[in-house]
Image (cartoon, rainbow, N blue to C red):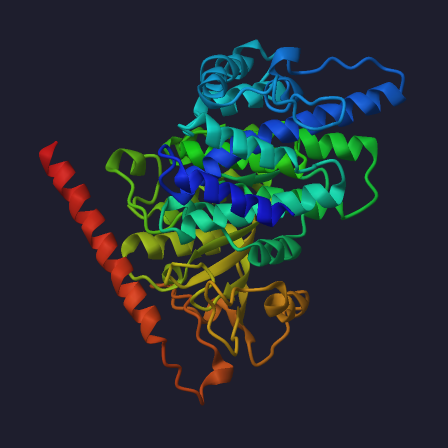
Length: 486
């Protein structure tokens, strides 16, 4: 039901003059979906309060509730066409009354860690782009058919919502930066194995997939007490995101998963000076896939001891610094990090090995990230003690990954099983740091169990990597030109 509804909504928005891309479809579906979800959320809260004999004060004033402006219904339970506005009347109400009313929640809220504040923040960042009030009416009618009352309904809806986020990337827009395949995220979380009471952080949150899956993992980890539920809601998940749309979608994604007031901040994480991070600012666990291939300006690089334009390498420094002693991390990064010979890469590997126990490296094949030919690895480490040996696992699949043949959890099941004991196998081996050249600190993936095979790279992968290098070269030239102008 959800899947067909989303497809029908996309078909309507495709006809609308105000929506020109998959990115717009997701953004516009999001705010309407969110208000319908909020209506069901309030009904559940009210019912629970009444059952416990407590009064419930609704968040939304009567005239701005879903059943008043979006779906006024008659006694037969169907839309009352006499009371339901459409066309210009509906668009004017949404643009000039509803959005300003909801935007004001941000200043009216008692504190930022409330759902009231988050509602105000969301509607301060978004605007209605649907130009036809008739199209808007059609979308509202479709979304009203969706129900978010049961756990199964919420789970299915959040799963399909994330599929829409993934499609933003497939449409060739920057939405792809926001999306890490869920089977990979779930696997990383299984290995890092967070516990309730530990704080979890992602400083490059995007659609907050790591935090959403972390929430699902911890919810299922034990029978939750009232205190556990409060801890998960308020004192577990923390994120930062630079881009406005990603920030809004991430916030809504977490609320749709069941975290009522996500601790997510709209900021550029890399603008923070590492020297300013205090013990109170640190977290127990980092789960993240920082953007790679970006190029940061010279003034941003000044915030880091190891200067580099590579966004992911700056993020890695940030994560090492912001982890508490004994803290654990699972971080996706380009595989070239393990072997690059430039000073920044060598210095960063040395710092990681000396300050953290890099106990596991998962080597992923090309095609894990749809639309990106870049090969990646996942670094698993614990802060506070130096690395003695690294256990490698090379994921070798008998198929090429792509949009129609994506990575699945079963592909990674052997890795999860072997990682517990760091066992040797045809796909896994250990390297002692004492055997690594202390000049270059080269941590390249070299499977000693596959010496008899000459591994030929997929031509498409080589072409994609050449395109990526060309793109990076253009960015570097732009940065140099900007610096020369200054």
